[in-house]
Amino acid sequence: MDSALTARRIDEEWTHSIQPSLEAYIRIPNKSPTFDPDWEQHGHMDRAAALLLDWCRTQPVQGLSIEVIRLPGRTPLIYAEVQGTAPGRVLLYGHFDKQPEFTGWAAGLDPWQPVVRDGKLYGRGGADDGYALYSSLLAIRLLQEQGVPHASCAILIEGSEESGSIDLPAYVEHLAERLGTPDLVICLDAECGNYEQFWRTTSLRGNLVGTLTVEVLTEGVHSGMGTGIAPSPFRLLRGLLDRLENVHTGDIALEELHVPTPQARTAEARAAAAVLGAAVAGKLPFAAGVRAVSNDPTELLLNSTWKPTLTITGADGLPALGSAGNVLLPRVAAKLSLRLPPTLDAAMAAARVKTALERDPPYGARVSFEVSSSLAGWDAPPLAPWLAAAIDLGSARYFGRPALAMGTGGSIPFIGMLAARYPATQFLVTGVLGPQSNAHGPNEFLHLDVVRRVTGCVCEVLAAHGRRTS
Image (cartoon, rainbow, N blue to C red; front, top):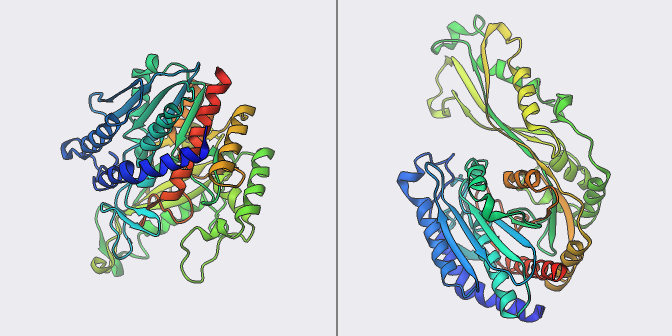
C-alpha cells in the first residue's frame, strides 16, 4: 500500500464524511438496555442504527451488502459483508450502544452534544464505540481504491455490549452460517497506553457483577431507640465485604479468584511500563494529594490486568444526605463489580463469591448476593508472524514508533465468546481509549488524530492478510 496516499485519504474521509455523521450519532442517547430498559419504546437504538446504516450505504465499496438485523425482543445488530478478492475471511467487530450520561462533565461539554476541542471529539459513544464501523468500512474501501487484494470481510456491530453482550450469543447463532469461520478477528473496542504508537490488547479481565443485600428490620426506626439493640445493616455490609477484600491493601481474600500471571504477560507489562512510566497512574484523575496503590508502573499494570479486584458501583437503602434523619436503616444493598483474571473460570468465581458472602450471616441477618452477570476474560493466542509483522509495519508507518502490547483491565464479552468458538483464529484487539478518554465517565473523547492512524494500521493488517492468503 501507498501509506502516504492512505493517510491523506483517511484524513479527507474523516473530515468531510465520517466526523459529521459521528457527531450526529453522539447526539442520539441510545443507552444500552441495562441503563434504558424501555429502549425499544424510546426508539433511540433504532435511530442510531439507521444513521449508521445510511452512512454505510453512501460508501463506494465494491461487493458491500449491509442490513440491520432484529431478533424479537433483542437490540438491533448491524451486519455487513464485503466480497473479497483474496482467500480467507476477516470479522471486524464493534458496538453502537452507549453507557449512561454520568455526572461531572466539564463546562461546555455534554454527553449528547458533540464538541471538538484540541483535536478531541467529546461526547458519549464516539470513542466507545461509535468509530468502529466507520474505521472498519473505510479501511476496506481504501484497499479497494488502491487495488490491494483483501479477504471477504464481515462487519458485526452489536447493540448490547455495554450490558454484557446479552443479545450477542443469539445473533452469533443466527448468523453462524454467514459468519463462517474467520481466520482473523479485528476488534476496535479496546484501550491504548498512549497516543504515540499502536497498541495491541493481549488479555481482558472477566467481570462478575451482583447485588449484596443486608436486611435487619422490616422498617426504619429511631436511631436512639434502635442502635445498640439491632445491628446496623451498613456495619454488617462492611464486615461481609471484608470476606472478599483486604480493606488495607485491596487484595482479594479468596484464593480461588487468583491465577498465576504468565511470564509473557509480565514481560509485556514491563515493556509497556518502561515506555509509559508515571503515565500508568497519571492517566487517572486523582484528587489532590491522592496517590496510586504503588509507585511501580509494572505492578500497577499487572494489578489492573491480571489481579482480581473489587469496586462498589452503586448502593440502595442509603438516603441522600439532605434526607438522612436519625434513623437506623432497615436494609442496605450494594452493587459489586469484581474484575476477574483473564483465565479464571467465571462461573466458579460467581459460586465461590456467593457462598462466601451468604454463609453464616451475622446476627441471623437476611443476607443475599444475587449475581446479575458473570463473564469470563480472555488471554490472546500466540501471534502469527505475518500478523506481528503487519502490526509493526502499521505502527511504524502511521505512528512513526514501534507497536506495543499490554493487557486491558476491562472486558469485551464478544472476544471470549469468539475465542471459544474459533480456537485457531488470530485476534487483533485494539482501540483508541487512551489516557483521560474516560469512556464510561464524564468528558469521554475520541482522539481524532489517533483514530485516523489506527484506521491506517487496520489497512496494513488487512493488506497483509490478503497477501498471506493469496
